[in-house]
Image (cartoon, rainbow, N blue to C red; front, top):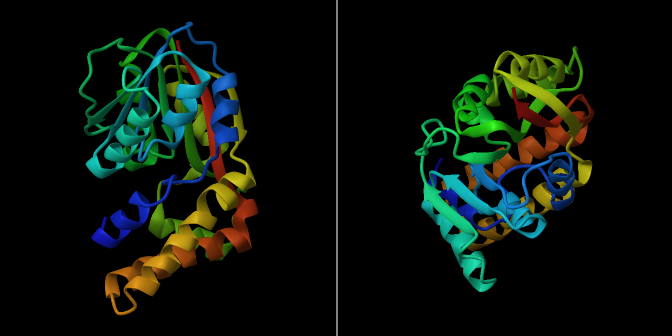
Length: 245
């Protein structure tokens, strides 16, 4: 990431599409123990971790490579007296620094793609206790024949993007049983993600009108928003609720 891109995402609550309601719905599809041990992979500034902290009395370990993201989450946890239940770890989600069978739940909103979806499922499976569960959101095609502009855009941005059926098959191949799945809501794209992102981009541009890196990031964000506005019915985030078999 460029410095401008990091600054952008450090300033907003979400680093990818999703919402409080989507996270809560995914959580309601699980059946964890009363005080589960949860790991939030690629947590960013902790959008999901915050919801999970309200939904459960368990301990949540948030993992991300970018320390400033985790510092925001630490500050939030301190302000709410939750430092005993929210732990942050600077680490690589491709090589998570945990023993096998450590967690009851693996959580990952929009981060699995960064290390290859199938690799993520295989890597994280060892962290789950017997019959542990996972909630993972993944960008998928909703159409077998997506519009050319959307296809061209995501061939650049996410060349391994596949259909929902493919991702379900991958999960089964990696040793998981599908418990439930659903598409992230449109509010999870617009109100929760794109609107704050566009507002922050505009603020950064106004403060640094001659900064080329800011201009580049702003152009990239607006191009992505344009694709979603025009062709968003052909793709979306699939939330997969899985159990280790």
